[in-house]
Length: 138
Picture 1: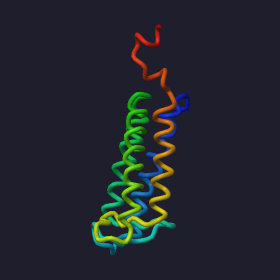
Picture 2 (picture 1 turned 90 degrees about the vertical axis):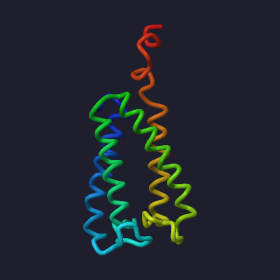
Picture 3 (picture 1 turned 180 degrees about the vertical axis):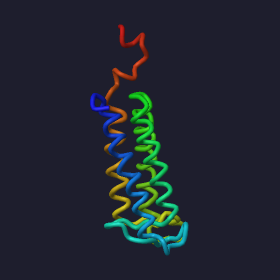
Picture 4 (picture 1 turned 60 degrees about the horizontal axis):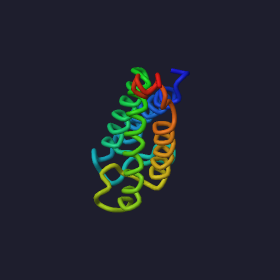
């Protein structure tokens, strides 16, 4: 995993998001499942639905990182793009009744930072390792 930036970053992000998902259940036990407000984990607001999303994303990132460079690159790029969208949507959702993930400003900053890192690595690193075999021989 250490020889591939995508596998390394995906593995680290995956493990962190899994831990955040688990820890979130300890602070959001009294929150509505998809409520607009939740418990506070450090600076981040989470509800049970938000925790489940973190667990799913963490599992996808870690699973792909443990699988192959191609899988890690694809999942890093996909999750990065989704986080970019969630960051943009979060700007409009905070304070609204549509905020079913209990997002706050700190969440938005984290989502944008995750998007930049995951997209940067997913699109920029390990390109030769995931190129078709014919292209690598040329």
